[in-house]
Amino acid sequence: MEGKEEDVRVGANKFPEKQPIGTSAQSDKDYKEPPPAPLFEPGELSSWSFWRAGIAEFIATFLFLYITVLTVMGVKRAPNMCASVGIQGIAWAFGGMIFALVYCTAGISGGHINPAVTFGLFLARKLSLTRAVFYMIMQCLGAICGAGVVKGFQPNAYQLQGGGANTVAHGYTKGSGLGAEIIGTFVLVYTVFSATDAKRSARDSHVPILAPLPIGFAVFLVHLATIPITGTGINPARSLGAAIIYNKGHAWDDHWIFWVGPFIGAALAALYHTLVIRAIPFKSKS
Image (cartoon, rainbow, N blue to C red; front, side, top):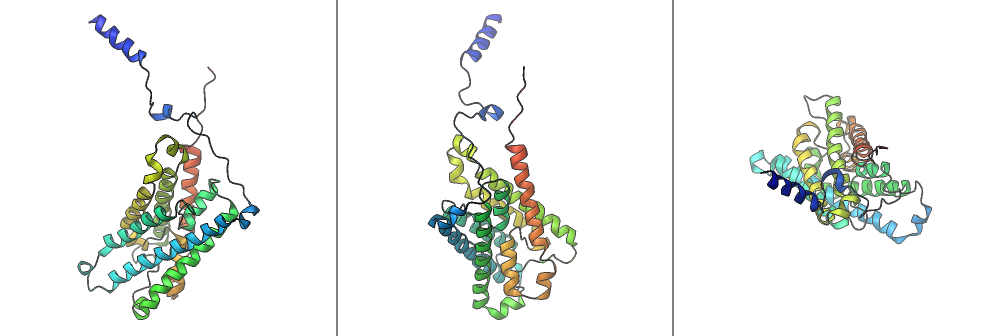
């Protein structure tokens, strides 16, 4: 028995693990940390890729609002939930569109389609302030146009059925709505950071290919959880576009929640990813 145990011990040490797991896998041999984006980059304004990325964000957010708000209107107009796609269908519309649009635009603009995502990536120094502000403007304009087209198709029903505007549901406090938006956006932005982590992409070739899937699925799951509370914002552009086109008092009463909540959630996700997940471990001096 002693001989066999010795053979096992020697054999285990003789052939070291070629593909270490856990913290051992986080070596720098196959990856070099990109430098942080500058705060201001005036040269971007003269680049066609900068303007093309903004246009891509506008079109993506336009299509996102068009499909999702139209789905919400279909559910609202149905005589009962069984006669429509219901909450699950709404959640699939939001998550499915994010999946498709991120896949389409990731190589052009990064596929943000959400000012909260842009804000989180800006805090992590993944893009400049110039580009972040431009993206947010184009996202909001696209959302307004997308909701506007839906209202153009069915103006009376749009106004009668709430226009897809986000509000805190009866029975919930503003604090509950704010908490739901913070946590929901944290889930989304944390997923974005994890799915697009360049270090993971360098080690695992499947990561960039599959990135749109977990992002879209995160949106789907958050909608399932928070539609009954706030109608699910987690995207200030989506909330703004629907509120402007609907433009009734109660749509604006709680509107601040759908900006403050997502931005806090995005900031927390950026801090968590930067300071905890991607923190450089301390090395002992011994």
